[in-house]
Image (cartoon, rainbow, N blue to C red):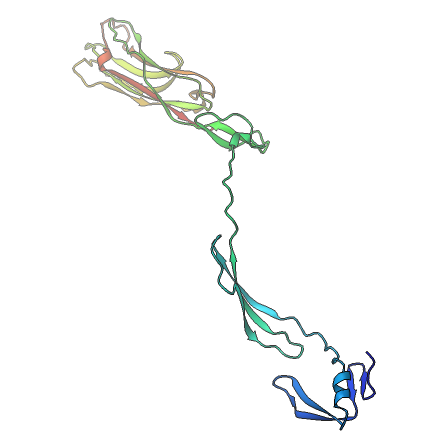
Length: 290
């Protein structure tokens, strides 16, 4: 467009001639706006209206800023309110100062996902085999993988049979109780009792030992000379050795506990007896870390 003779542009300045320019109340500092009225000279109305170009664009103002964005999540499939977003002015800003708003926004949550599935034994960092009564642990070999180990459960064992005995033999095995190999080491905790049918000359002690009648003793009951079947039973109490390692059953090793009775007084050949009905014996495996 060709600028008419009565309009002159000089950078951002606009000069209009052949007209009257009236400033209406000049500049309003509260709004930052000045109002003017351009009145053409007589006979120049059509020329001014048809040729007055658009005013030059002002400098871009600062972008508005959000003080708070208040997000409200709406369930999937639920309609959003109308409008779904509102902006509340906090400060109108000014020359070189951005306006400040609070934004309130409503959004739907995403669609529900499908249920996942996972098999532990299919994990890439799992080694070993899953079987009953095993627990998941970090591989003790240090690989960083997950593997399984047997839980150290306490176990109880009782004799399959208990023997009745008689005669004047010095030592007798009254019963045995066995543990199958376990994947962890353990101690055997023994308890039992027996009524001794002795004479005025006999003294019968009871004990429990590991592996054989002469193995490491793990429980004991001191006898009394002259005890008979009319007296209370002798009762085993745990009596592990001072060096505990000698009584410990190693991992993956079977163990058998023996219940022994022995006449202690030397030179005595009197008969003495025990009966299965009045003999008790049971043992418990107590697992230990190592």
